[in-house]
Length: 172
Length: 229
Image (cartoon, rainbow over all chains, first blue to last red; front, side, top):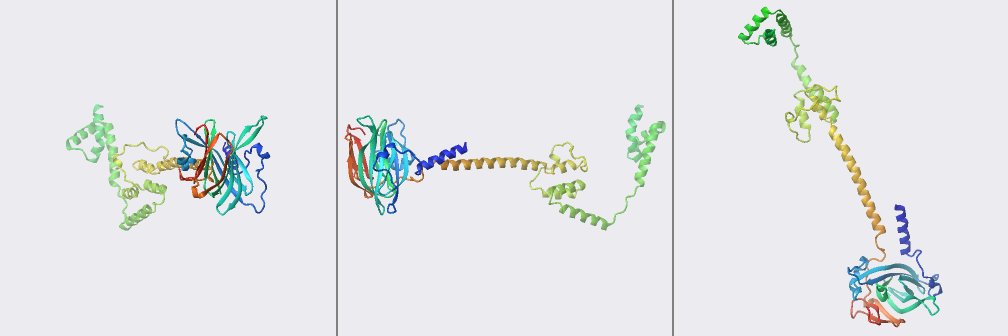
């Protein structure tokens, strides 16, 4: 039993730290698929927390969200859960796509790094069926920004079945 | 016959000259009449004569001093092992030995006279005189050995439990702790973020850009156009 738990833990750790993880199938058609890095590229660790907000009779906030609870409570929701937690190493000029909840995912494109500042694009995507009935990712929002390393940028509010989806993104 | 039963217990004291005159006269009259009691009385007299004739050998003062030194040295040399001490105590149940042994005890004990009588030990037939043997055998530290054994088991169990708890806590901290790389979330403040461009392609949502006017953090929210959220 201990061995089984150890294997499960090792698998979870590998998935959390950039090991084998779920990659949406549509990324093979995307122009932002991560590519091999050249010597001039700089690696940046992108950290993303997917946050599901709901209204419940008994309010709940995941412990990891306690530091930002005052900010995310500025809505009708009273309960907040971490539904995704990813840390990925991304080279400048490339991107990574992180599935969050239901059909939503967030693509992060790292453009360049200047000192402590990282310029990147955040692209919210949602899987939808097109006119032909084929499931395709649909871009909901594109945001170009510069953020200081180590600081989490809070964004989102997309509708879920039982709440709303947002994300906290940081570059290191 | 009945007279014999009355006088026979008095024959020894009569032979020793310990009876009162009235009793001695009565015993003498009976001995003259009763042949069996007279024979017993004569045997008692012979034994008494032997005791009276015995003269213990004279012991010089130097011999007593030498014996005292040997006894003291032997007693003082027995502090190391309880087994040896008990042997000395059993072999030399002298009044001089008892106080020194009591002084060695680490805790006060009630007087021995107050203790209830104990049965003589069965497993030590070679023990010394019956008057001191029970106490000596009880000091053989049989009970302390039991205590050591019992506390040894307790210590083993306590150690195993402590080790299990430590392992469980360690495993829990390793497996169940949230990703330590995330750490505490420090939200980006307006001076940490520059929004260069926003394009919302879903017409069902409106965009709210808060760069510090409504909160200390720079955030970008979307809200459904129907007014939800």
